[in-house]
Image (cartoon, rainbow, N blue to C red):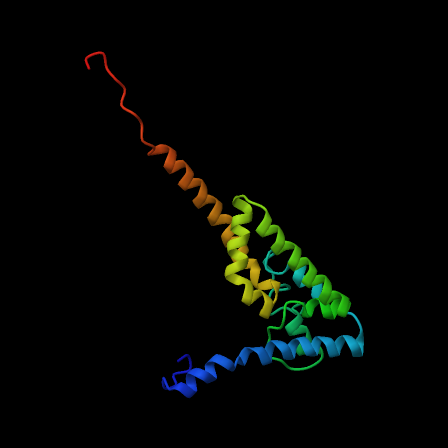
Length: 178
């Protein structure tokens, strides 16, 4: 078991239905809702969403002041970090922000399922691998995998296409002696 418990049926059932992280991320979302209701919008969390992770800096990223988890921890209520990805939308725009975030994610996923190509395949793989992490902790967790995927995967695809051409079977040329 994950925590080193015995492999007893009670422990297996407990691990199956008890999702410990759910409480943490839901708490951060509820804090963002309460903050919005008490103090109104704060657009500073959008800086992290728009730039965090893509521009290396101490001002952006998971530990920055602009991260919604850190912002809530410093200005409203202590929390362990993380939070549902639309917590930023709640802090910036209220309930309509949650709907906007969900709508944009749905459009993006629909696009990935309906379009073909190398770029879409890379995005699709990344989103499917990281979906739970993105939903539970925020879009910022996509930054480093995004950079990794879009540098290495196209290079790998290019290499594989070129190596296939290089080692492609060629029919022997008939000589005049045969």
